[in-house]
Image (tube, rainbow, N blue to C red; front, side, top):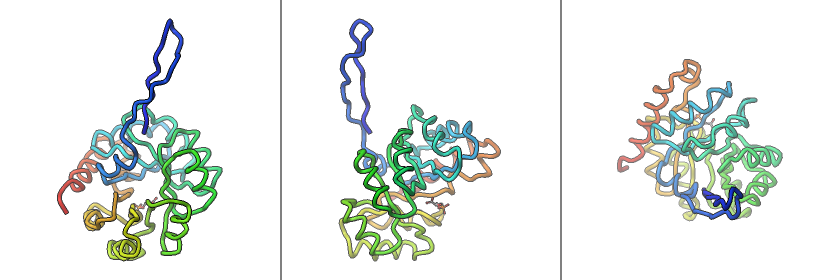
Length: 229
Ligand code: 3PG
């Protein structure tokens, strides 16, 4: 992430000064849990993002699974989060999320034009892999970080360990079936950067507008992530 400070001389913006901020990778290494958010009503996006940031999980994925997803990303900047787009499946969607200011993108699978569009724009992308062959495709596109999805169905932490024994330089983000009870088993695998999951942002709590409930779930996950594995 990069912050731009615009200096002004006699009311005119003259020169952007680039202040490097922590990268998405650095933030992921620090927080280690990515809440996966699906927004039905646009107005819910800012309070959900604020609740997660307050709970200590500022790296947030907002999915494109609903009509409100894209605008939810666009309208949630400036709240202290590192905002990513989830369920990005095509090059068109990649362009849309870049335009909406997504700071990273996640996909359930891998499509080369989608990945290339994001790479060309300098937006970190985590395509989903479920097989060794898909890791080989990701590597051929220059990627060394991928999501493993749906990891719970694929064999859990043991599956990720097996993949890392073949590709020790790959970093993995297991997602799909990860829970509060299992997240630490994944984080104990040395090549796992972070886990992703929707358990931190249940649809029921959003419907009730229970923002403090979401903060509590985020806080619990953030605390668990910091305990030694
Ligand atoms: C995803 O988008 O990666 C998954 O739907 C998240 O899976 P979960 O709902 O099991 O956490």
